[in-house]
Length: 75
Image 1: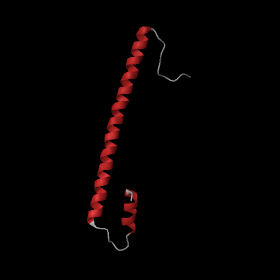
Image 2: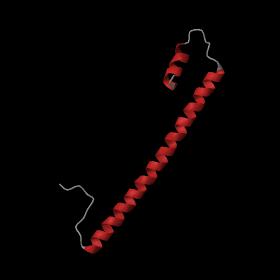
Image 3: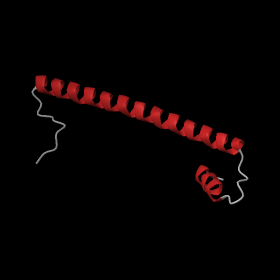
Image 4: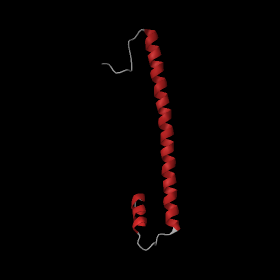
């Protein structure tokens, strides 16, 4: 059963049979997912910074060598 299915089941439970343990388990899974999202965003930011540094370094090297290389889109 997916997290979404469990949440829908709790929302539709007419008898209120879902206990606090179920809600705690769901909250823990949500926390893990949020932590993973945060980790991926941090990694994405680091990769973006690396790419910007690579682009700047490549542009500088090509400029010194007299190569007309650019990372900009051509019209």
